Length: 166
Image 1 (cartoon, one colour):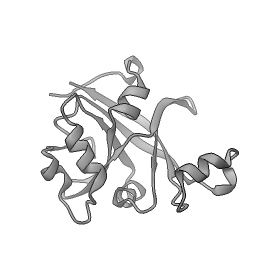
Image 2 (spheres, one colour):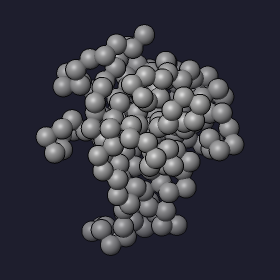
Image 3 (tube, rainbow, N blue to C red):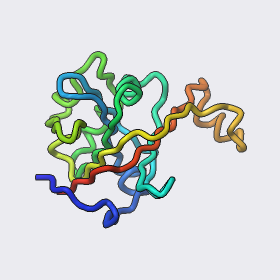
Image 4 (tube, rainbow, N blue to C red):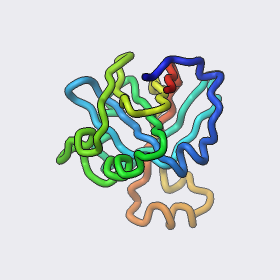
C-alpha cells in the first residue's frame, strides 16, 4: 500500500534507482494510458521547485500521452520486477497491453496513472518539454554514440507534486 510522503524527505540514489534499477514513465487516464521503461533521468531542484527530468524518444508511444497530458508519473519497483520492466521497455503499447503482460496493476490517483506494485511513485506536473537538437551537443561523440539514427529525445521536466512510497 502506497502512502503519501513529503518529497523533500526523499532519500535515494538516482544512479541506482533510475540508471540501474529502471523506472516506468506513465501518462494518461483510466482507459487510455501508456507506460515505458526508463533508465535515463534525474531528480533535483530547478526554478525553486522539486523536479524530475525524463527523456523520451520520438517514436515511443508513451510520448503521445506525455505530450497530451498535464501529469506523468515515475514509478519505481522493488527487486523482482526486472522482467516486467524489461517487457515494458521492449514492446509497444500500440500492440500490447503492457501492464497485463507484465503482471502490473494500474493505480489511478491524483489524475495520473501509476502501479500498485511500485514502492515509490513520483507524480509530476509537466513544466517543460523540448526536443534535443544536434547543434546543442558540445561533445559530438555523445551524439554519434547515442543517436546514430538521429532520433533525439525530448526532454521533459516535471514538478513533483505528490510522492508515495510503500
